[in-house]
Amino acid sequence: MIPTVDRYLISEYFILYVLHVNILTNIHITVFYS
Image (cartoon, one colour):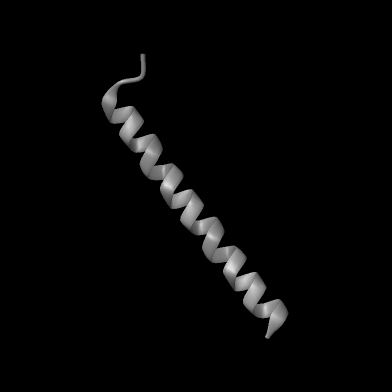
């Protein structure tokens, strides 16, 4: 069993990671197509 706090932290880090990847992808797309 994973404690509730650990699951909360994992989901928080996952959301941050996904946002970070999306931002980097958007920056690369903007640079390449501008």
